[in-house]
Image 1 (cartoon, rainbow, N blue to C red):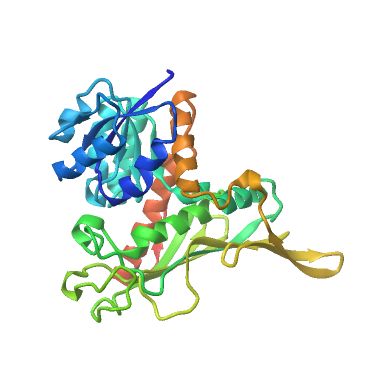
Image 2 (tube, rainbow, N blue to C red):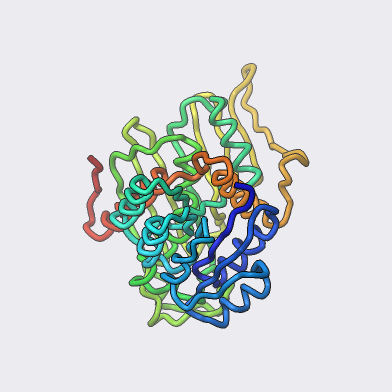
Length: 356
């Protein structure tokens, strides 16, 4: 296989901001098919990014019946991720689905089972793994430079950054608010850095404290409190089977000056590391405490525009061309989904949720 023919299902903001420009930079990729609930958006995407013989389809089924298409990207609301991804894999397509994997862990599990049954590759779009600082820190963790990592803090906090477009505030379509939207990125990073996918107990709490107030200072304009049906903050303590602990903080709107997104702080037996103020490593050496600020060299392309999204796309397409496992596996993403769901359940029931 020398070329990969891609179909895009969903031509909204995430497709325009991330998928289209990243795929356009990969010589082997041809964007051949487009579908969106807005035909106007789909035609616009075809004109800007499509191959000369690209087609705009009026239904998802028609796109999936296009035998030219080998890969499908799913960029639709959370409640449609499972249905579309499963149909695509059953139609013989490899699937990159936007995060989160699905609205529920049951749906995510069906996606994984379909991938295993059909032999089609399935990956979830956790692009923050491909940032320069993430890749450097993952390599350090993999080499054991932090030792046994027994504490991680997953940060996904905005002071006032509520997304007011699309269906982000709709619980029925999205399944939740900042926890399932941005908390999922931070949790994915923490689990990946620790290489630990065995949760034992989850204790979580969600809040809807600022949603009812509205905020003229919000980054994307004020929201309608009546339409804000998801949480505005969520926090959790996750205990892993090996005794390690993850603290997860997630919010779109919080009265705090300590805010950052898709970052982790790690504490191990040999050293610690954090991403909140640049990339730093700390520990004890020669009888003294030290803090090292890591300045990444040019080979990391740390300041390159859209670096993580482009690297994600290239790694995904390479997994197709080379027939190898994607960097983000469906099994890993399922664990993220199960923990997120346990946090919501814990908050609803007012008790800790145990895993088998």
